[in-house]
Length: 268
Image (cartoon, rainbow, N blue to C red; front, side):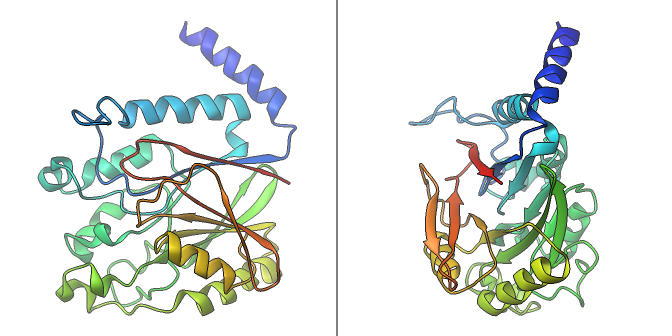
């Protein structure tokens, strides 16, 4: 059975690779929810096994080289997995699911910067956060201001944004980092990625919140897609905001706890 499935996957992949569609699978605010919900209105929903099955099915159907898997932050904190195991299992999950790029949420900092750095050393995905300077911290070689990945035959640049952690993280931790206004950061980096790095698309992984994402889209230029988090907003379809140049920016966000999988298709 395993061999038959693998052969079928290869067949589907070989057909779909000729297409230039890019599929973006996106998560945010999973908050250490490794298991399905055990009670309440969402009992039985979510969990890593369900996520893995869906991700694998999309990669099989559309071709791994055409599928991006990203996380918009707060993969940490929220269940006893984090408090008892220090956030290690969350990194294991990101690696097992083969995330391509993640940004940081405020809860990634809950156990301090040195502890976050220890965990990120094991993470295989690229970590982007553009509006903080980590040069004087243990994160300086682990977190990038941008990264570039090739998918669907295109060169795709990534920017990451994090909310002002002074309001939501222990002050002794937050005071060691300086928040920067995302608008000039985005304008500078998006222009750099498109003009100097020849990126076909720029995606912003934002842990600012939905209202802030819409405002950001309207006040900047060069961003094509904002994958959001932080506000736990459930968007049933993509939202479109006009940027400073009058061009469309797609804004998406995928609720919380891994209860859903965000699925966005871009047709080049």
